[in-house]
Image 1 (tube, one colour):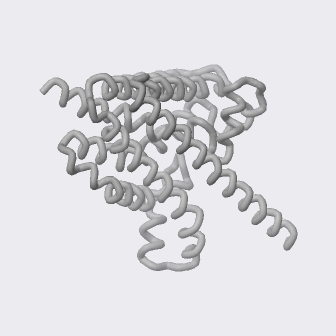
Image 2 (tube, helix red, strand yellow):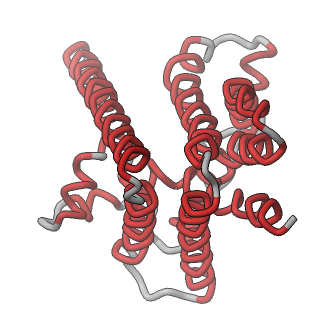
Image 3 (cartoon, rainbow, N blue to C red):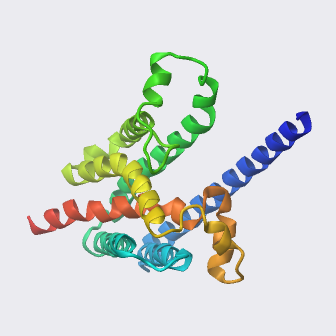
Length: 255
């Protein structure tokens, strides 16, 4: 039992190290894209996001294990709509807004803040107070979602508020940035939950390991992001928030 516990702790330590290294590499990659885009005018960011969005959709299709029924078909169609809307959002802000970088950050910062806070609350805070019956513990464990039992309404509200507080400075740039910030703060958790539902409806929940066993470039990316849950798990919230944020962007352009 003791050896098993030590092995589990060592495995968790290695996975956490991989997660940190992968996060740094992802941040460096997107940072390089922003620099390239900003100084050369090459639309590197929209191109990269479009490729990632398409690959996320391909992941859903590739992992389908059974013949799709009516429910699964609408789930795949909804995923396609999200992917297209997210791509349109990125290209519109690149073409029509000189300060597109601020808009992109007002979208990305709250999503990242929500994901990070949800990870640390679920991994470190909740286990420490699991035996405690304090109001904080009761609130964080309030209402477990049926389709994602590990997610709760309490944690969702808490992490969304944390994301909003972190991204509040973007509100000083105007109503458009504030609306994108609010959408991203609360939409990050919604996008994550929605993606879990869509993956279950298409029979691909928790089956990414099969895809990582391949030899394609896509399989290599999946293995590289395995500690993060795979490609789709890393970008599902960003894609959903970008898709919804297309609404205020269009309204701003019209009026």
